[in-house]
Length: 127
Image 1 (cartoon, one colour):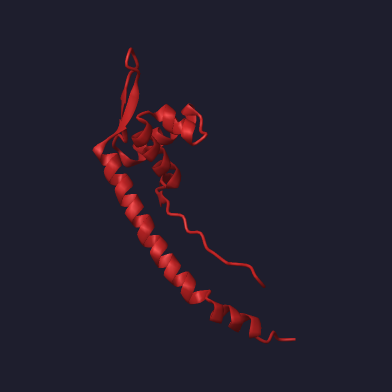
Image 2 (image 1 turned 90 degrees about the vertical axis):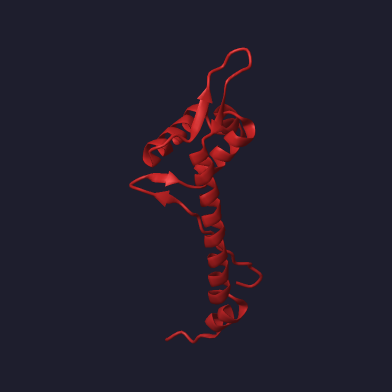
């Protein structure tokens, strides 16, 4: 480990028996909020519309409430908006992610700082 810069990765996922919410669902909801449609959000993520629809439907089934309100097409075109529950869920998830990241950063620095790595390198291995 000469000039290698170590880092860590922590991912927050809220689970039941299946994944109920994680970075993918959060990104999809953010995309819907920004694009105004599930199709636009899926396109931004290079995800098929069918996959995006399935992700949202599965999350809605697990949470027990709708995450989007969908509007049929027509002259003005269709679209989707986030429900108040989805906005709150997204906000809480982001806050939890920030808290977990802060704890992970602190603990990583405590256990894997330069002094700790030096101690590991200097340890005598039994022969």
